[in-house]
Image (cartoon, rainbow, N blue to C red; front, side, top):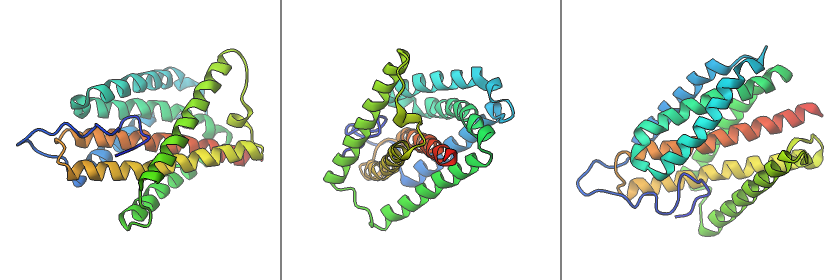
Amino acid sequence: MRTANPALNAKTFDVADAGSAVMTLEGTVSRTAIMLALLFTATVVTWNPSAPQTGNAWMLAGGVGGFIIALFTIFNKKAAPITAPIYAICEGLLLGGFSSMFERIYPGIVVQAILLTFGTLGALLLAYTSRLIKPTENFKLGVVAATGGIALFYFVSFILGVFGVGVPLLHSSGLFGIGFSAVVVVVAALNLVLDFDFIEQGAERGAPKYMEWYAAFGLTVTLVWLYMEILRLLSKLNRR
């Protein structure tokens, strides 16, 4: 099994305990719903389009806390029933402030981004369950390679930013900037297909019950990334 999601890798489900309760698709869906509910609830704390800077402290705490909790969860999967909900709350704090900044400049953009994110989730889930999209090994390899390339580009851009060097593709509303964001959105969306396949195989292999929380955590990671990239893309389109 191959997936570009750092929270899900080929050995994630090699932890089944004989005789214990096992992971199911239904259980993973319910855990994911809880994660998203916590995330949306937490956005209320930092959601303030009229003065987005007022939530900067919470936003920073959510971003840093979410990153630390994510790393801890990846290396300690059994803690997922506790850490996954905390991660969702942290990401809600981050996304509330992040979204407020865009909403203040482009009213209505957040609703559009949310609808497109869940529309994409629903469309790809339907395509996956109906087998219109088949995650072959070549498909997985292509998505993993593209995701790795994007991650490397963002890392290099961050380092250059520290030294005051801007990267036009990240913020430009020109054709190349929009094209780059569109490609990133597509790659993020295709990661959902890999996540669906990975979760399905985990359930089939009888992973332990706590892996439902871990799988929900991994899917939430992808959804947060997809939403943020859609928001960036819409902002670039609105600037033209």
